[in-house]
Length: 355
Image (cartoon, rainbow, N blue to C red; front, top):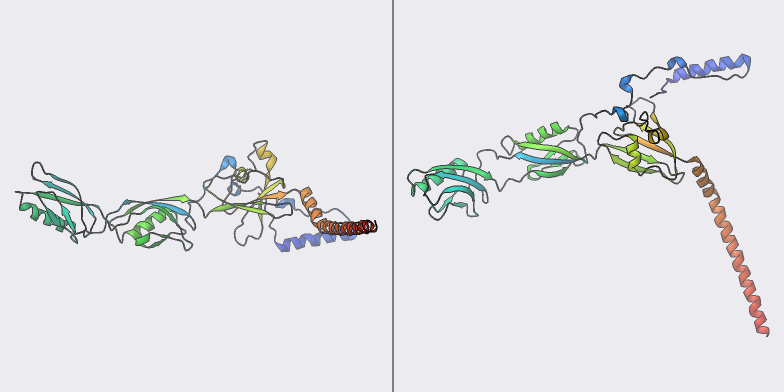
């Protein structure tokens, strides 16, 4: 990759030296290019190609990416108080032989759980797990000799599960609904996981969340195809990390009828660099010859530019310039034909009246 970024002062010196050479001895051909400036491009600066693809840096989430979130551990912060439609897992040792208590029990709308016909119902609404255990034990002691009660919260009705697709909003946040907004823009997937878990720790005991990027929408490259003077087309393509120039061309169905085989990649230069980074593409080599030298790997922000055919550009330009005159001549010819037709029709009508 050659970069022709020379200071303005150096260019002025070259021009002055050229003038001094031309002055005393007439016109001569001057080579302004200084061969001493040629330096081999460092290996670290070589752009990645088809056979030497590189892994992109850790992906940083941004709008409008889509995240896949799944709550792996969702235990409410203690002390949790039972609510209607919660599900409790209750196990009791020492029950009647034919009526065991070992199942999942729903907290009904009245705030009670029904342990069976022989044991009746016990009110548990608003109680902690320890208070529920004591309340059930006292109830069963009226029937059983030495009941041993174990209670566990199996499902909380008031706890909304976190699972599904979540889009990163323009302000860089994801909306976790009843748990509020979490800012994730600019963070890696690992950092996003840690941030969401820290936020959810206000509601759950040691929460665990699985985070995955479902749609990479924020990192893209562009395919710009000239239209032979009739307007350019621009296609925005999300980048996932392994796209090459050939992949980009296949995305738009190959070269159009208006395109030439002059293609290059325009890569955004670092701030204040002051020059363009252009990577020329040998289309014939990478397609017919399967050469990989110019089949560059595309990076976020790249522009794959497909130039138009010069002959078609000239043809369209001539058509654009001559079009108005052709329309005027056509209107003039149509008007003349119409007038002549009316004159001829008038003569025939007069002749018919004489006879």
